[in-house]
Length: 447
Image (cartoon, rainbow, N blue to C red; front, side, top):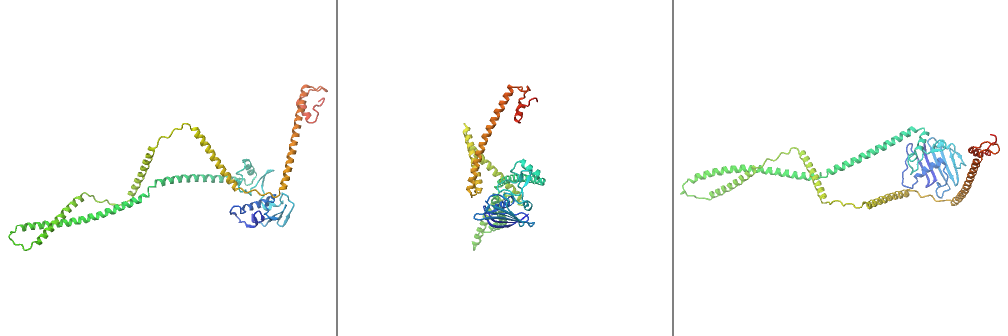
């Protein structure tokens, strides 16, 4: 397992050293900060990639140094066009595009071979490539599983991945259904905030009823006082009747107390009449209800409000639908269908253009050409080779045509001469042509 990676003048890194954890190491950071350079460095170290694109601009050489947990130190160095390795102090030069023989055993990042020519890179994954084997053909995945010693483990991993995807899709569908159900519940509970206002109104009504009950008790007390006063008035009336029998010649010294008494009696009589009217009016009232448990009342209020809201919504919908006119009849929908088709195609093109713009924005600009003379020379050699190939192709076509003409002439001669003019033997056209092609001059006399 790798323990430490050091980059010196490699791509954008002047000198960077990272310590790898025993388990998983994750590199994070903004774009173009050099994260992918570590993967490229390990690929160059494992495969000795050709080219000088990895040398930092302005530097003369670059190096990649890797230390493993079992004590190995591997260094790859490129100076101008010369590449060398140093493995545990031993130098390796003149490698061209190959790697030292001991490197795969020490580094353990070599590709897995299947057969004579097929190879699988199980250690590195490109940033914008699909997951390992998911983007390849089924035959290539089958060859890898057939050649891998851990094929059963990989198959189980693939099954586990598929089951996790299926569970995730089911969970997503369940959450969507739950979201729809919650939205419907919230729509039904929309009238609930009005219950607080209605409950406050009922509370005020209840308090008013309690105040009226207290007033009724006070009126009852007042009525009892009026009844007692009425009894006293009656007693006074009997007394006055008794006094009326007295002779008139009696001299009254002072009539003011009697006038006051009469006035008081008249006032009491008026109060008695008012009390009788009040008692008559209160007789028809029933006793206030006793409030024991308001939960049933609250449930009834909620259901009533819910039904009222549904009725109002239905009435509003019915009113809106009554005002609507019949939809117009389409006399010729072909033009509209063509317009819809063109709009759909335009929307798809816009979506594709957006996806291409996003992909192009995420692409890294191509590297600048350092040596244009070599490329021009290569292009000239390629053009010359292509011209030579076309010439040889024309020569080959002419030879094929000449061969076909000679073959037809020989078949025509055999058809005109079915027997050999020398030995008199019968000539078979196919055998004659096969003998001529193998160099036996077409026929063996006396055979």
